[in-house]
Structure formats: structure tokens, C-alpha cells
Image 1 (cartoon, helix red, strand yellow):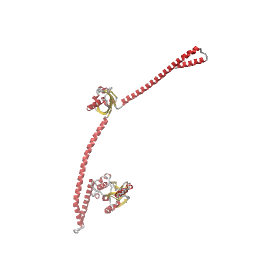
Image 2: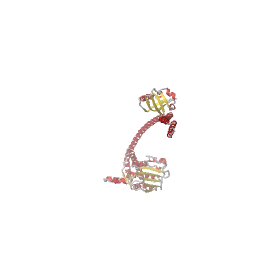
Image 3: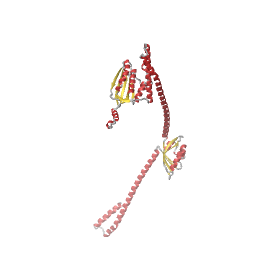
Image 4: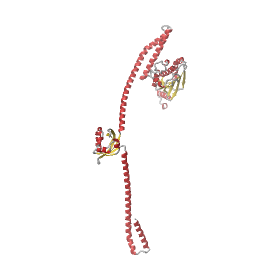
Length: 464
């Protein structure tokens, strides 16, 4: 290119000389003939250099591409060598052609040992038929996904492998990758074993529950029948003892009156016990009939207090009332009286003379809670749940508080829960006890809606 520039410059100088009259005519004519040839040579040389530059750029690009491909190939090989999965190439002849280091780490055999024998020698005998069937599929051009078999380790144990593979029939090889799933298989086997054990335990538990349910039904039927058979003659005993106490057949001396009074008290106590057993059996069998209605607790509390007050007066115990609720409950009136009577009589029984029993009522959320608090002996933490079970009583060494069969609180709990309520106790030894039960509150909106339905009033505002 430098020579071409020199020719152009010489041509320019010659033209300048000719214009000044410095060259002869034949010289000018010669230059005019040579100039086109020089220009053509210069153009050819320029194209040659351009082509050389293009080839140089292509060469550099190809070198860069080859370097990139080589680096990627090196990265891929490094990834395969460092992978925990087992990569391999298997020939159609059944021998390993190439393996990554994970095979040696997992099975314990060297690369030479693995490639020296047919791969079928390393497969568990029970898995060989299925493996050969999968290899036949691969050789026919199909793809293997999530195939499982067991491979022999150098220590004699077997490991579970999960395979994904594809074949190249032209090259007569199989490209495959396997993953060690031995721990997963062991966990799966443990899970199946646990499920079977759990199913067996559940079946046994179901059989025992049926036996317990049947025994409970038999017990309830027995108690109900026995109570009914006992109550019939007992009513006669109570009736005739009342006649004797009223001296209708004739006057009695003081000793006879005392005996008749003992008969009345014992028969009355036995009759109450029979009633409690009947109630308990009905609660357990779900045969207790409830007649729920809306009412205020104020309407039933005076009746219960009038019955319980003589017992309180005998021990000089004050009964206080703190009613802070104006809402209505939705419950069975008769059974609510029974619940209140059981809690109040229980509080009086465990409260010493000159003590205090307090009845309070308040609203909490969608319920109305009623509490009976006493200043009695209290209940230890281990006995708080036990007292709600039948035939259980708190032992404190005092004979006066061990009267009864231990059914009152069990029946009370059953009656409250049958009416969709809850009951609980708060107590500390020597600090008295507070028994609280909750019953669902009757909402005013529900009452209005019931009236609207009864009167066939189609007013959407009453439903909201």
C-alpha cells in the first residue's frame, strides 16, 4: 500500500511538471500510458490487503469460539467429575465404556474393576430381568426415566440406584446417569413398616373401643334396670315411712319416731342415689331428653336458693349473689336447676361453719357464665380433673365431706356439656374453690327471626 501511494504521488508530480512545460511531449505521452496500469495495480493490491484483513478477523473469531467451546467442555467435564451423581457410557455389549469418579466413591470398586466385568455382574440377581428388559427398550430408541435397581458394593452390600438414560443406536452406546437413593428407600421402607404397625394398632384399638363401648352400654342398661327395679320397692318404703312419721296409724313413742326418721333419711338418700345413677346412665347412652328454652338465670336461682338455704343456715354460711348479666340463656330449665343445686350443695358441704358461698353471673362473648365460689378446703391440682369423674371424691380425712357416692359433679359436667356448655374449676388447697359453667346465650336477633318465621313475615331486615 505504501508503494501505491508513492506512485500516486509521483504521478501528481509529473503532472505538475508537465503543466509547467518541464517535460517533453513524448515523456508526457508515456506517463499517460503508464498511469492507468499503476492505478489498476494499486486497486488490486488494496483488495488483497482487504481480503487478508477479513481472513485475519475470521481467524481470530474462530480461535475465540474454539476457546469458548473448549472452556465449556472443560467445565462440563469438571462438573461430571465432581458430581455426586454417577455418569456413565455403556456399550451395547454390556460393558462400561466410561465412568465418572462417583462410581468408585459409592460402590468402592476401582474404575478398572468396574469396566473389566459386564455390568450385569454388579446388579442384584432379583433385578437382572427387569434391568435387561429396560436395556432392550433403550436399544430400541426409547428413553428410560426413573428406573430403579440395586448394584453390588465392594463390601457385599447393595445400594439402590435411580436411573435416567438415553441410547445412541448408531454409536451402539447408552448414555446414563444414576443417583444413589438407598437412604430414601430405607426411609420409605421404615415408613411403610410404621404405617402397617399403626394400622394394626388402630385396628386393635378399634376392637378395644368396641368392647369398651359394648361394656359401657351393658353397664348403663344394667344400672338403668337395677335402678328401676330398686326404685319401685323403695317408693313403697318412703311412702309407708311418711305415714308412720305422720302417726296416721297411731301415735309413736320418741324411740319409734327416731327409728322412723332414720328410715326416712336413709330411704331418701337411697332414692336420690338411684335418680343420680339413672341420670348418669342416660347421659352416657345419649338418651337424656332436654327441653331447651330461653330464660334468665334470675328466674331459676331463687327456687334453688330456697331449697339450699336451710343447709346454709344450719352451718351459719352466708350466700351472696352477684348477678351482672341481663342476657338470656338457651337451656333446659329443670336441668339448669339441677346443675345449680349440685354446685351449691357441694360448696356448702366443703365450706366450714361461718363461711361464705358466692353465686355470680356474667356475660363472656356469646355465652353466659355462672360461678359458685366457696371458702372451703380447696382442691389440689392433681384432683381437679378427677373430681368430674363418677364415683370419685376428694379425700381429706374428714367424714363429713365424704357423704354421697361421688356422682354429683360427674352428672353436672354431663348436663352442662349436653347443653353445649363447658364447666371448669379454679382452686388452691386451703383457699376455697370456684366452679364456673357457661351456657350459650340466646341472641335477640335469633328471637326476632323466630317470631318472623312463625308469623310468616317476609322482611329481610328481620333476618339480618
